[in-house]
Image (cartoon, rainbow, N blue to C red; front, top):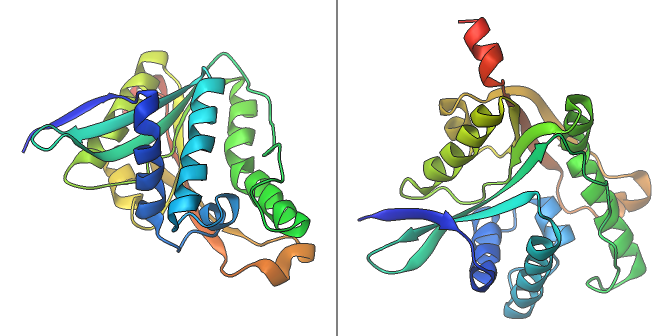
Length: 217
């Protein structure tokens, strides 16, 4: 089996979204709330369209894919956000149209901001010199290829790399030089507690910039 790493084309993004949601199933409150009904064909169609809009609107984000060359199937995906002296605006979801009620839309907005706050703080603290990753699928070596691409980019820029790591991905990140800095347990705001079906948890992990690693070796 031969795997190939490449950049996602627009036509790949619906498959990209499938990999994101299949990687987490229904165990990830953030994904469940921000991308409602993602387990359904209709929800996946909408999610793919939203991801495509993200891709087209954010020049600082690189969407990667890993393809099984024997079958042509995309089996892995990751989204790397590259801040090279640039602090992106801290926008919200910007719409309420995808949720069944204004209350659910409000909960999604709150979860979106809570989940991204550690990353946004790291970007602010770095002065916009940071690389972050959202790898979603680790399968047959694809995950390592996706992470290696990003850490090489971070080393080339001599910046830190950060990730919100799941229980399933933590070991891979540690193999790639990331260290767990905090176990984050996202408590929903009180006004949305009755909507929460599970508590969002993740490991906030940081890989030091190349120059700091060399200085400490």
